[in-house]
Length: 276
Length: 179
Image 1: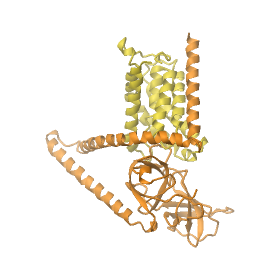
Image 2: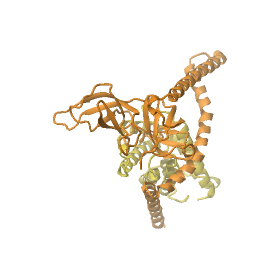
Image 3: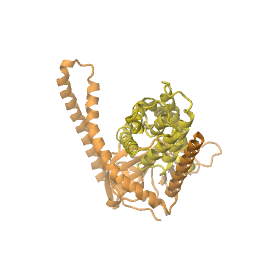
Image 4: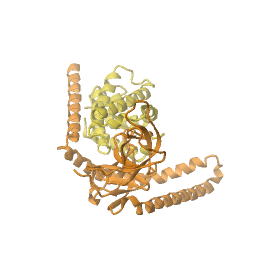
């Protein structure tokens, strides 16, 4: 009896592992990826409004508790006054937040580096859903013309690239993600590859030969070379440090993003698809 | 397993997904946030045994995979292996031991994150091993120590839907009897 239970248990786990591996291979295979992508797209159409609803419900409660904690030391007879002050402060903070958002939107209205490229302005819904990737979710998707591979910019420069596009939402990989690689140009036509190094780490610029003229603060722009993933001329990062080790075949360069990636409430998706 | 249990487990997974995406994602220490996903198979395994852990791990992982940018099916695979392993390893331990839940939550969450990152890298997602693992393990481990108690309560409610009508909740693993 116990043996039969054990073998059933083992069989269940083997079946689940095989099914999981099959799903993963479907997702990673170029020909069957559309299947898993379609499932995710449908799920996101349901999930996004639900999540937004939960956020809308929880935000005021969170604000209330934040206010309560802030004024926790005040005597109980001042509760009413405390609530009023908290409410006023919340409103003031909200105004500050709103004006910050307005500034970001205004900045997006006049991005000089985009020239005549059409864009779609999107609001950030979610940041870094997983601890292992640097991504943001935005509230524009295929129905707005947003597709996989399109560059995403903010005030200051390049933010990332669309890696998943659903019906009404999309996922953007930030340039700080370890998987992000951007071909750039700087100075007198020198080229490099800006490489994301994961959360909290500086980006690096690779493939720069020794003795290439460089200076701190030098801005690197997307190169737009043939078959590039980005149109040319978008500011990507500025040089922070550089040095050449003896015998090294390239300069070790650390760079920091030109766009402020810590505040990406609004972004512009450039309706530009890389050449296939 | 009764349809009632299935519905309750689906509800618990849905609640966990919403809490994770609407609340916990915003609770950051540095760039790391707590992870509720691994606690579902861990608590299911502690209550229902290896088979329950594997099944809950698979389905909850699949639900989370729908909204994560990582490869589809990876969380399901790790959740399934985690649930089965936790259920098997803790089968011989006295389930009433007060240290059991927090210790298993801490070790299980960290191990699951490690497996998740390594499998992701093997599948071509090199960025998944470019994170600061000490930070991730620290935040996820410590938060799991605390979050395991409410999650365990929810999971106990879900898994004992059918037996609750007949008797009080069993403190011992049922060795797959619920399934």
